[in-house]
Length: 435
Image 1 (spheres, rainbow, N blue to C red):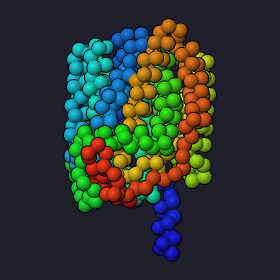
Image 2: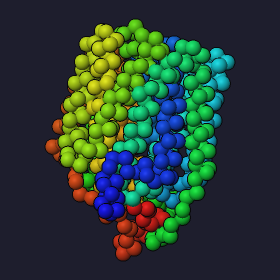
Image 3: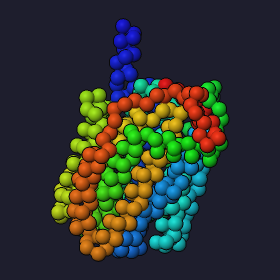
Image 4: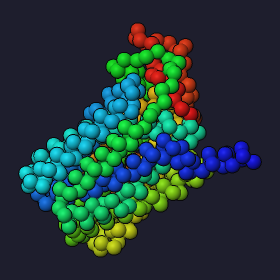
C-alpha cells in the first residue's frame, strides 16, 4: 500500500516539491523570477522612453543574451568542477550589485541608451553563469526519475512569475518610476542569496578523477560533438528560438506604437504570455507521459507561429492579449520539450557542461535574432517583421527531417574505464549526483 502511494507520488508532476531542498530553491526561484520580469518591463519601457528606434529597443534583448552566448560554455564547465553552492552565492551577489547600480543611476536620471545596454550586458554575465548552474543544481536535488517533472516545474516557476510580475512591474513603473523595479529586483535576488547561504549541500564521494576547468570544458564540447541525440536538440533549439525572439524583442514598441498602451498595458501583455505558459506547464507533465518530446515540440511550434502571425494583424488590445495567451502556450511547449529531450539524453556527470552548450545555442539564437528582427523592423515596419518571424518559426520544423529528437535515455553513471583523450583522463567530475 505504501509502495503504491510512493509510486503514484513519483508519477505526479508535482513530485519534486516533496523534496525540501528543491521546494526551497523553487520558491526562491519564483521570487527571483518575479523581480526579473519586473526588471524586464522596466528596461524595455525605459528604452522606449529614450528612443523610438526598433533596432535600439531590440538591442536590449540582444545585450541580455550576448554575454550568455559568450560565457555559458566556460561557466557550465566551471559549475561541474567547483562547489556549486559557493559559485551560486557569488553569482547572486554579482547580480544584486548590478540591479542596485541600475536602480540608483536611473533614479538619478543618469541613464542613457548606451548605459542601459551596457548594464544589461553586465547583468547578463551573471545569468551566463547562473543558468547552467541553476539547472544542474535542480537536477542534483531530486531523483533522476523525477528530473523531467523538475525541469517542467522550473519552467513553470518562470512562467508563474510571468503571469503577474510584468503587470506588477508596469504598475510600479507608472506609480513610482522605472528605478523602483530595478531596486525591487535587487531585493528578490538578495532573498535567493539568503536561501543559498542557508543551504547545506551534501558532499558526495566521487568515483571519478578530479578535473581541471579547461579540461572539463574541452571534454564537454567533445561529448556534444559525438552525441547525435544532443546535437539534434541543439539544432532544433537554434532553429526555433531565432524566429521566436522576434516577439520578445519588439513587444515594447508593439505595445507603445501599434496598440497605444502604457507601461501597465505592456506589462499585461507580458503577463498574458506567462499565463498561457502556466496553462501549458500545468498540462505538460501529464502529456509528456503520453506524447513524445517531438510531438509536443512540433505542436508548440505551430501554435506559437500562428499566434505571432495573427498578432501582426491585431489592432485591438483585447485581441492582442488573447494572442499573447496562445503564444505563451506554444512557447512553454517548445522550451519544455527541448529541455526534457536534453535532460534525457545527458548523463548526470556531464549535465552542467551540456546545459551550458544548450544555453550557448539558445541565447546565441536570441541575441542574433534580436538584431535581425530589430533591423528588419527598422526598414519594413513592426507588423511585417512579426509576420516574417512567425513564418521563420514555422519553417524551423523542417529541421526535424535531419535532426529528429531521440527517446533514448543516457547512462547516468560515469565509468573509469573510458579511454583517455589527448593525454587527459576521461571526465567524471564529482561523480554521479543524487538520483
